[in-house]
Length: 80
Image (cartoon, rainbow, N blue to C red; front, side, top):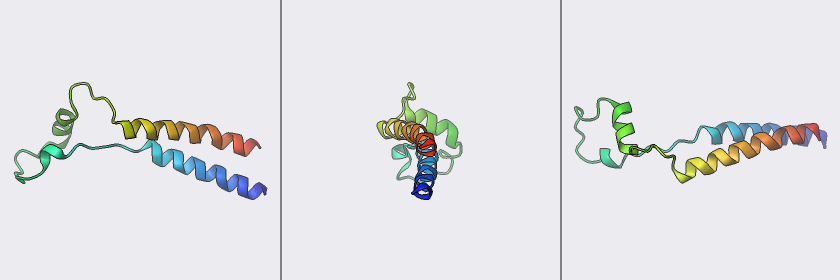
């Protein structure tokens, strides 16, 4: 039983790391023409496509909340 708890806690830590890295890139303006001159600078174009406010997408917020929950639960299971 103790080994299962440790294994589950490690799985929670891995899930927290993966969910913490979730990012959504908006590629909708880049489809179609394939002009390399417009798409040279990925960082500048991506920031412009995201908008002025740079608010995270809803799926990014959910992933962050789940990552924090996993990071909170993993030590609790290890202590148990």
